[in-house]
Image (cartoon, rainbow, N blue to C red; front, side, top):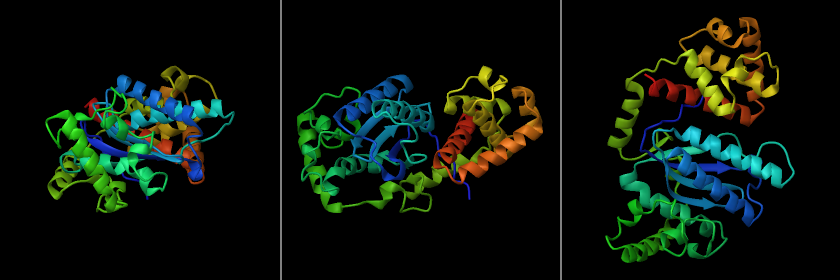
Length: 318
């Protein structure tokens, strides 16, 4: 059964979880974590999203991201690709770093933002790494308390809930986080406690969001499909239309054909005219892609990302 597409709503807040492939480590030393934070900061400047909190563990990470006009899928694609390149270079390795696609739960900020940020900061405590989250150097907790500088971190929406005076807000927030440790694991922040695991909020929030999501059908065009593939796979239209049979380009054409077959108003014949391939070649490529996706989580994740990006492109250009 295909996964539901991610919901893109400009201004929405997401709890994002990214895990290592086969639960393997994604951070090997302090330099890796510093590099990831640098890439994250660059992403904020490039894509215009807000980061409300983070926690970097050893084999996974948590982020609280408020997306702008650029969808979360595009933000995370860039972040994971750039960091994977760093790890593969620094560790002299090849292959996948992350386990398929990231997990994302959209949360109702008014009711859950402060709770979610506190929950993130308590990850090292729940894992038995430290007794107090203030002792863990790789989360945003110390920045919230003013003990470290992180001007690219957005703290005001959370801290303002505790006091209009910054010093007092930090004190009360620290008490709030420490008291929240008694709650333990909260499955709702992982999408495991609602009818639609993509969203966490009260009934009115969820119903209104899903109503907007389904009210206006989106017509996905051939151009949307090709644009999505180029965005997700880092290809150009010139490469897609070239005679190249390289792996990346061939997979890109297969991804475009798969989206056209399943989610697009166009046909493989139209796509073929765009990329210089016949229908038989494209159909065979789709069959191979689907077969590989059953054994390779990264290919399945790219298929999901391309599908989501095509829908986003269609909405933005409608």
